[in-house]
Image 1: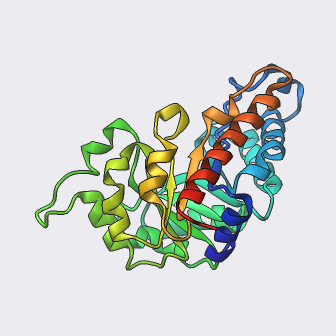
Image 2: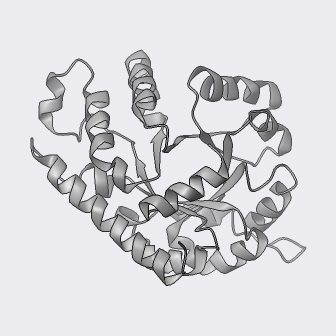
Length: 273
């Protein structure tokens, strides 16, 4: 998916929502357990219910890999069901030496054909380069995450005066362009967003951390948007588990619609149309 097409979807749907598909079989409504593939059937209904309100779906591979072969089958079927006008992100956080990364890239970009993948950049360029060989695919580098222990390393000051995450973002710009690279910035790190936008004014940022993690959509949007929108804000638990029982989709739809309507207001405030 190209950057131009992604921007068009944001304008068309008046949304920059990414729905997380980190499906926990122990948390989904129990009536799904009667299906041959409960996880896929749940994902299928979530996608059908939310597609008109979001521009991306993100599946964390750990929730599928932990279930072995059956999990991989659920993941492949889920990807196949994601509409082609919606960005598909595999949250795999891979990062390894070049020949190993080449195999990971083959898994997720050739065998499974995801549009984008999250990667850890801390082994440097050669661990990322194999993913950059694929046309119209995105790499999404971890920059400043929303977990509490991110401060252990990501905000360490360097002799140059930069913080470590700033150096990572600045260096990574030489690896690719804003047409193929994004960065992960947690919604709870709004205090650093202006610094990040000064370094990468034109890149998309994948922003987890609203909803269950306590980040503010309005605050992160106010300082994080650029002239194209430039944000993909991710929500998982607050959508997936908004409702329970056989009528769970009613609450899922309402919650997703509420987020989309809030995003439309944020887009309007920035005159993005």
